Length: 396
Image 1: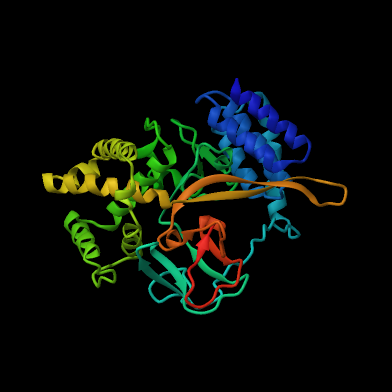
Image 2: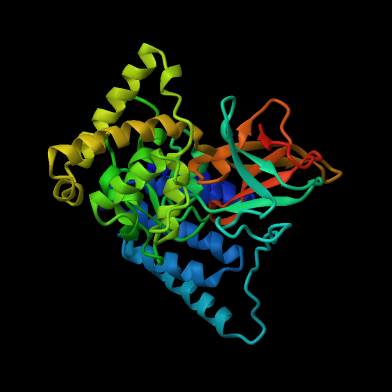
């Protein structure tokens, strides 16, 4: 019933020419529809019509194939066949020009740092008692300059916001040919194999009373660490070196290991937690540990009492630093007047991510840089006030 209501709303948007809003509703219908019903087939078919209007025949043909495989009503099949044929003919005409969605070319305004990917060489990490590790500039910065264009170490959707339903749960691309998880309705790109490549099957529908995106983010980081370090002793040695202050370790073999070293050194502020906060963190850590140890790859890897105790401490540490996750927002324009000027706009959160270097930028009510998400959820850091050499970077 709910799936049908959502699909009907999508058809109304489609009739008004509001294609993105229509696709949101058709995606929502896919998440709500019961497996085996024809609602899924109808939603795929309706979404294919959106792609036709958007001059994206390849995407439309993909959705038509998905509709046919999802119990699309046989008596309506002739509509899909006609639409498929028209899309095929459009692709094969010499005059066809595919729709191109232009995206700003966001590049660093300086040379890239020799140790950190996506970081300008004008930035430097420092440490003091007041801010812990933070970032300063080695030269004067001007308004508009981009000093960071960094990919996330880990990123998860925020399911408290409807905006996450426009993006793939794995690669976070917008408005692709989505399929849904049979258990929870999460979206994944159908043609890129995102469902198979993600860690979703391990964290799907885990009951948790606290902020679910924080819990999922910690689990995602654990999976990334587990993949980056093939042996527990290698991970133990890396953390022991970090605790001794040896950041630039010669035996780091990959970008994921280097990124983890940055993440691990974020301020944990254990001593500033109240008893109630510590109890909450301990409960969350215990829940995450129990879940992780049900996964064969972890159960076989962390075998000894020493290794399992280490894993418990690591999980607790990750919950402490998960507060440095950066919320990611979609910018949405809503309505316009006769003069063509947008009446209002909103920022809708779609996920949270941990960035190895970007998360070191301290907060301030008087920020001098703006951090926002670009394509593929890369974080861009752009100067919004002049910053003098030696001064610290602050974000809102």
